Image 1 (tube, rainbow, N blue to C red):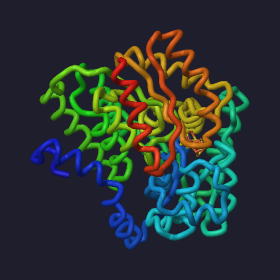
Image 2 (image 1 turned 30 degrees about the vertical axis):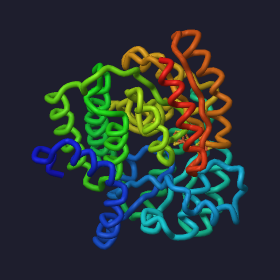
Image 3 (image 1 turned 135 degrees about the vertical axis):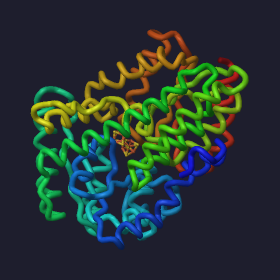
Image 4 (image 1 turned 180 degrees about the horizontal axis):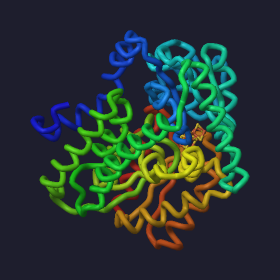
Length: 380
Ligand code: BJ8
């Protein structure tokens, strides 16, 4: 992307369309005989498939198009992310799934881990056993699982994953993450230099670039451009978004919120959960470092989930947040149960308003959602 010559709206548009644009890149990549690994979760240490010479792509679907097909095999009252992802795989409508040589899942929530069993009817699927707590025993299990992943990748792609290769991948992923953190933290400016919608599109779009080095360069160049441009005109209340992944609902949620406010921070998987925490490049045992970094992600599948609470406390202060909105995907039990603890933290400890909404990938609730979100931002 010619980040230096294009104007900002054009650059944001390119990032927003990246997922679709890379469908063709995936095909070209495969034609060159390179392996592709499909993943479903932020806990997956992408450094390992990258060190094995594979490209890594997220298979979490963001459209309700194939949910009816999925409901032939899965219960209707299941999270839309699980149904949509399964539906695209089953109907062969997702090029990323189609081109994936290996799909790696992990035991996060019950619906997802049971869905992987059915996915393995169509694809080579490896499921990593993710511990449900961040205890020392949990850490030992996660390291063991990461070493098992190493063996699976070595066998599958006939490569040797030497420590040097893994350390090189760790270094380059740290560089990518740091570039994205620097970009994301521009939103600490008041007013921010871009809308939450533009920020989200860059964070999400850059994860679908196969040339990761070029993507990092573009993010660095865009960050510099935005610094030069400075804040947007006009103050508005500042919102932090948290909860389930928002890939399939961000448009309706962000457009409603940003009528009267700026969404300045994302704590969910497109934001803080995947960005914060670099892997210790100098650790004596690089697998220890990987296990520590990834197990520290504050997803609601962990019990207790101290990391999420700490992250939220810090982000509310750092991004000068005026209100928190939690998006829970329909039937996402762990995030739904955790809303009570988050509400308490936000309203009692931080003394700012909190709203939890439940939604799915359909457009059926657009009007109702807009009314509730507008009412929330108007009172800030
Ligand atoms: S680290 S948020 S990507 S598990 S599929 S839990 S929405 S019911 S996706 Fe997730 Fe990893 Fe955690 Fe992030 Fe709920 Fe749906 Fe389950 Fe979901």
